[in-house]
Length: 485
View 1: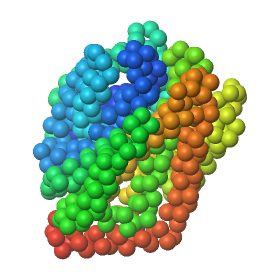
View 2 (view 1 turned 180 degrees about the horizontal axis):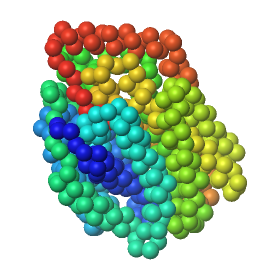
View 3 (view 1 turned 90 degrees about the vertical axis):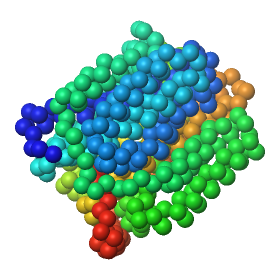
């Protein structure tokens, strides 16, 4: 790829950040709209879960495929296709006549979204070749996530109250079309020198594992354990299939050897735990503020600011700490704050007091603000440079899987607890087990952050890197270099 002028590089960064912004805003703004969607589409709790999980589930399943495809056929081409599909999916979502159609169109959105974030990150790393410039560009990229966390609930509340929940999807249309036209004109094409070959069997097994597991969790309260057992069986069979099939491929979709590295394994579980906590936290908070306290969407969005603003402020601080002192301290802060927040709600019913509710939101915001930056850093710690992109893609997939499972599990616990009882009176007690689960997710972040970032853990990463480099030299097949956040 030819060297671009500084102004052109900044323009490419802005275009990539536009794609991240619409994807991130779509998730955070949609949570505030859930009660309005529930009323407008006559949806159950499980229906609300599917409006979120249909998106994150497809996204998690396709991220690695999209990254390797972009390496092979061209990053600009795949990025533009992602913008077209995501924008089209957004338009369809805004026109959805019923819940089933909305869920289907959310899946279309997710197919496009899977082609945006990892591919945009790869475009950035290939555009900014100087390490310092690249670090600053990635810092700007990370700040966009914080902006979406802070602005999403408020913007969603304003749109729902003034226009209606469908307007949340309308916002994506002008931004997506603008990004598409700018990409066509200003983003250069690039490919990996030698991309990874497709792994269709591994891809099907991943989709079967994620889809069957999520369906079993969400539908268990309504359909009963007997009805979902076949889906649990499919998930188990897919997992066993992955562990048997993937090690036998030269270029697997998921290289299971990565998990011999304690930092990598820790980062994977930390990502799942932290984003499960985020998904569950937003789901419970939105339903409580609007369906129990009776707030409108705008005031519910304002109540989310004590969580969103610390996330925005702590994210860059976490990045600086990772650069100067490593990922351990930010993870310890993140795990402690998220655990304290969960306990405040689970043990002391923080929802019933404005001061305690405010404090619980602030603590969770601090925790989530500190957790995101160390995940990718820890995942790629000690990995060979040619493997860093694949390792980061697994971390990105773990984030989406975590959010999917968080909404599925917390929603299932809430639905089982409420049962046939009056919703408002039963909500706080029904949500308590969910808050304990979120506290457990925070504790997992805390313990794994301490355990997988010490001397022993670094030793496992070095040994894993040595094995991977040796295997790569013997096979002569370099790995994909597509990074993902």
